[in-house]
Image 1 (cartoon, rainbow, N blue to C red):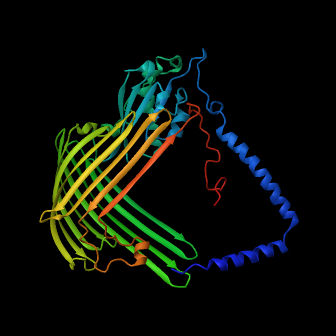
Image 2 (image 1 turned 60 degrees about the horizontal axis):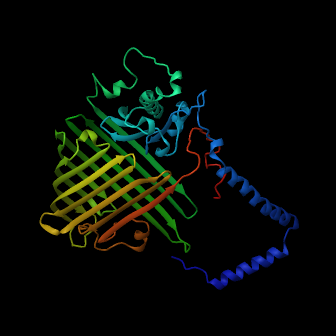
Image 3 (image 1 turned 180 degrees about the vertical axis):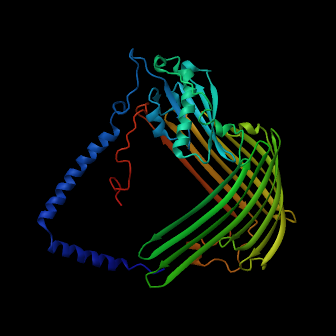
Length: 467
């Protein structure tokens, strides 16, 4: 890389610039700048006052004609729920920001299937509704549009709220209407005649281009997959291809080009043995510049036990599994073990625990694997993530992962150049890999979240963005 200019040279040029500025100073422009500098703090105070002002004026609580507050609802949905849409459609409840302010806590868990995404709504009664709980399930097909999906969620949420709204003065506004025939989302949950026989196909193609004066990049990704999911079987297959190219120009006029390619194929068949057991076989193939793989092939089998029934996996799971497989590797370059190809067998086991509760969620998994003919070539991985709602408005998130790596047999003998390290073109040798993070969030102010105002919500115009 080119060296920086000496500090003395930088001071010299800045001094010259300062003297030139004094020689050609514009008095009118100086007065404008001083005026702007005096006005900016005042504008900032007005903006701060608007941001920190009383939230009740912006989002008042709904009340009935006799002054009784409407039902207070807290929707606990990490992803897949359009909060803005739901708040504009369901206006007869008070949306609150924290479960401790709610009378009904709706915990939503989402689980993907072969041809649909299943939303489980757990209605948890609080305060006067303590003990009044229920569970409803909505299945949304992958072919649904975003609007169809969010309206299906709205419909199920409103159905679940009926039993609670009935015990409030808001019940006077309820109207019951029955549509003769199949419900709108019934074909997603009960398919009588399926011409596709539960098979779902997905195609994806995306590209990205970026260009600046001294660097540019382009990437292409495409994939195709097919899957079939029933209570007894889960099958899937697919192909993925990725190409990335980056070009750099340095100050001395030299250039560097980085190209990375990756191709992979996979197929698997999983069979349900019992409410707590599953078994499966799979095969895959991969080519990767990053991993020094010209070609690679793998076949494996696994068996898994879930302490809880799989029907509850969207809310809790505690699984134990064992797997064994064989792998064939053909390398682009000679490895650190002086090999261009090799074949090995391996085995391993993993334990995974996950749960979602009104207080938050927790996930933990531990995996160990090793080569059957060489126990020293092994890998141990541990990952954990916890999100905990401590008190009203205060939540604590922590995640961490650590890996002990002893199986990097694919590393090229020549190592990686400095340029390849900078652009992450090659996997680097390492014994340990660690990742982690902590997040503490605190929210206070009005408990209500009824009002939706999207004015100037886009950053594309640079309204509050400096660059």
